[in-house]
Length: 129
Image 1 (cartoon, rainbow, N blue to C red):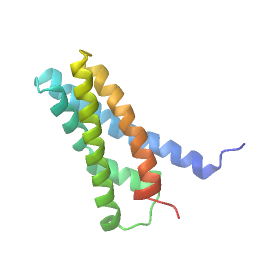
Image 2 (image 1 turned 90 degrees about the vertical axis):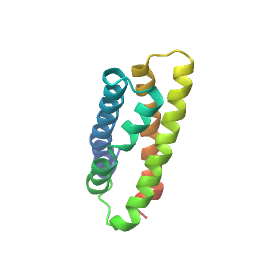
Image 3 (image 1 turned 30 degrees about the vertical axis):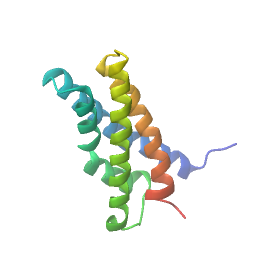
Image 4 (image 1 turned 60 degrees about the horizontal axis):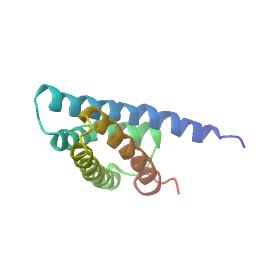
């Protein structure tokens, strides 16, 4: 089974744009927690919410090459990221209760958020149909 160029392009740009957002999330959450001594959950939620604008722009423009208006797409994207922040916050709280290091919990919770983000973006935020 061959992967079409458009599927390959979408995956490539999702990894690029999502990877940028993911690195921002990791950097923000780790910096808040380890440098400023903010709690794990607050650090993770802030790290998930702060990169929303640049990541939205990259996902809309490059990953999904969407013609959907920003007015229509951004509220859906913001709601998705708010939901992701809640999921990431819950996973971080569970990890902290289990005694896992913040850096490990941030990584695992972020990966879960990335998977959820791609599926929801492809189906609801920037659908191709």
